[in-house]
Length: 357
Ligand code: ATP
Image 1 (tube, rainbow, N blue to C red):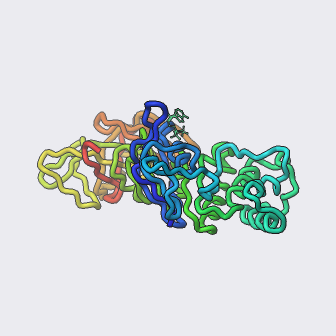
Image 2: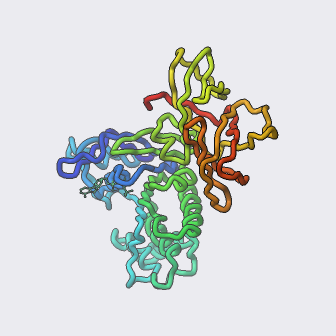
Image 3: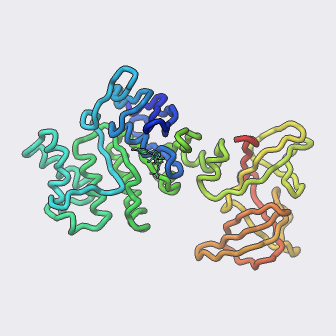
């Protein structure tokens, strides 16, 4: 049955932080709240967890209303049957790994063999089978976060909630733990809400991403759709590196600022003289020398000059001027600053947004 958030409002003192947002998370679905710092992601998650009282709207978990201030309904966290993993692992240093994991079971009165079996099961799921007797100080950061994950799932929760759980891990461990969390969530087939401002985490782990800004939902969608065909300027700018070109509709064609006609995969017609914003991802663009060797077969080609080169190792980042319009292109080949070039791209690599999106 999942989670249903309807018109959620949350204020602190007189300041409204979450402005009546609504979304569902289906059973087994992994949904990420993604947005800049301070946009209200954590507050939304804490409302779902029952760690904050809401000011309006309804929250349902597994078909049960757990929060509805208008009817004075508020279920405290321990009645919501959820597992939470935070940025800080919040592991008790004086308890063994097994004792830490058993903690929520003991708190709800489950002891003995039942608790023991549940801890063995949770340790196995997170890949810490023989580490139950260790002290937390004997574990790496990644292993401690796995203990926190085992503790979150040991009580067989109906919902998993994650608040930036990977922020304290180094880059390599973050990648590995990211994959682990995805695997475990799919294995348990329970709904998960994951909060992050890290677009790579959101795109790689989620079935669906909800993009938030200033307490509002900007848009939501599957990662590929949001990345390639966003509906909003904010999404295109926040997720990935994008170029924005103003294009104009004339004689049934869209024209780039340098006057070249563009070929698009999507059929978008406009009114004569209408302007739209074209989104071009930096890594979808190709660069060729403008020295006679450039192929003229490209459907979309803009003349430009390389203004700045940043060598990054696996790729090179170029700042390019296309008729005075700045563009960023990521490429593997070496070009010197000042080189006259053609920026080329396929019809599928250009996506049009309404001018005021
Ligand atoms: P981050 O990625 O930095 O954690 P976030 O999107 O999760 O950001 P929130 O933690 O939800 O943002 O905070 C949203 C806003 O609510 C911020 O302006 C924050 O200062 C404010 N806020 C959060 N908790 C409280 C509180 N207990 N009292 C007053 N203001 C709060």
